[in-house]
Structures are given as structure tokens and as C-alpha cells.
Length: 253
Ligand SMILES: *[C@@H]1O[C@H](CO)[C@@H](O)[C@H](O)[C@H]1NC(C)=O
Ligand SMILES: *[C@@H]1O[C@H](CO)[C@@H](O)[C@H](O)[C@H]1NC(C)=O
Ligand SMILES: *[C@@H]1O[C@H](CO)[C@@H](O)[C@H](O)[C@H]1NC(C)=O
Image (tube, rainbow, N blue to C red; front, side, top):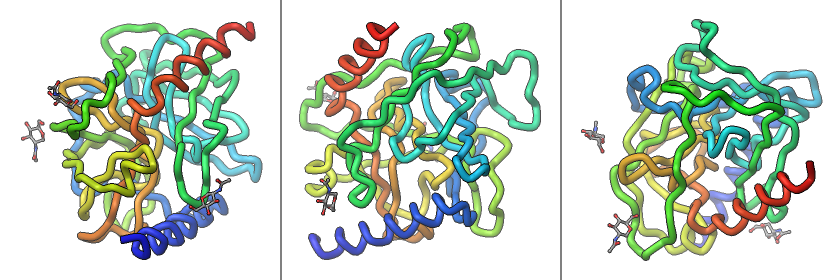
């Protein structure tokens, strides 16, 4: 298991480097279906402006009027977050777009192991909460059993041939597996061909009704196969970090 994990890690690194260099190898929800419009009002599309001039995308989710959570590997030079969005081709007046004032990637984020892949974003102005824009509650303390009825959603690529983002929010069911390596890395994991792809990074793993249990982090190998292992940063392990980071951010002002 240890040796497969290290191969997995090398592939994860390779995949990330490809993305960082802008050679489109990004992905989206594989094997899912379109979400009912606005049924996931905590979903955020992160438009990322990179230092090389390119624009990339990640998912994220609203924690409060002015904080969004995402993955640390979604860091960029600057961002716009889109809230209340379903179809990117239909940017109605109701879609809110807000810039990011400050980012708080986890200081122990390890890009080669893809551990501690969590980041908080402080918005430059408060989101207007309504039917289409609502924060999501976070999972409570871990009690040792895996959460059930999990779903991930995102605007990432949806099939092998198409390199484009999905214009509409897609979602797919996820069944978590017991895995010691994942638990040691403060992560939940799932396995199989269907799941999130790279454009979905930073989005929430929503389980047990409507609670965020994880953050979409990485998958190995990068091409979807029956053996693909998906990793989600486990939110219950980062509750202390989230609370102290928000407190610090608010005190700075
Ligand atoms: C990051 O992870 C790699 C692979 O597990 C490990 O070898 C390295 O020591 C880690 N780096 C830090 C700074 O912890
Ligand atoms: C433990 O947590 C899981 C997942 O959050 C939940 O489904 C289960 O009901 C909890 N069990 C108890 C005894 O609280
Ligand atoms: C996905 O999960 C939901 C609720 O957890 C369930 O109602 C639905 O039937 C599942 N869909 C598939 C395709 O398994």
C-alpha cells in the first residue's frame, strides 16, 4: 500500500505541474449529472488570475457572508468569486461577483503529498445572502464512522474529449472508503471512475443532508479509471484551524 501511495503521489505531482503550467489537463465531474439549478446555494465558482496571465477555475463554498473555503492548491495572484451561479453562459443580474481581499492557505500545505490542501478566502465585501446564495454548515467532530450520502459538485470538465469547463453545475454521488493512508493525511477518500476532476478542486464534499465534510483536493492517477483514488481534505480535522484563521482575519481589520 505504501508503494502504491508513493506512485500515486508522483502522479499527483505530475498532474499539478501540468495545471500550473497551463497545459490544459484539467477536468470536471465525471459520470455525474446536472444539478437542479440553485439547489446548492453554497457553491462558489472561483475565477483565478495567474501570474503568467492565464485564467483558471476552481470550486469553493460559502462559509459566511465574507468567507469562502477552497483548496490550497487553488491559490492564485487574484480572484473573483461568483455566487448564485448555475450556468456560466447566463450571468444574470442575480449572480454576485466579488473580489478576494486576502487568502489564507494552510501553512502546512504540502504540494507533493497534497496534504493540508485547504484555504480560506476573505471576500472584499459581504455576499448578499438569499435563496441562491447561502452559507453551508460544517461537519462537527468526527465520531469514527464515515459520513454517508455524499455528493460533490462543480463546473469542471465532464468527459475525456472535451477540455472545456462544464457551463452548468454538475454533481455526482460519492461513496467514501476506509483507508488508513487517507485517515493519516486528514483526508477522506473514494475510488472509481466517477468523481470530481481538477476543475472541481476546492468544492465541498457534502454529506448527511447538507453539511460540508470535505474539500475536493486531488485524484490519482489523473485520467479516470476504476482505480482512481480521490482525496478530500477532512473538515472535522481542520475545525480549529478554520475558527482561528477567521478570528485572526477579522481582528486584522
Ligand atoms: C511533503 O511531503 C513529502 C512526501 O510525503 C515529504 O517527503 C516531505 O518531507 C513533505 N514536506 C514537508 C515540508 O513536510
Ligand atoms: C457518526 O457520524 C456519522 C457521520 O457524520 C453519522 O452518520 C452517524 O450517525 C454518527 N453516529 C453517531 C452515533 O452519532
Ligand atoms: C445519489 O444519492 C441520493 C441521496 O443520497 C440518492 O437519492 C440518489 O438515488 C443517488 N443517485 C445515484 C445515481 O446513485
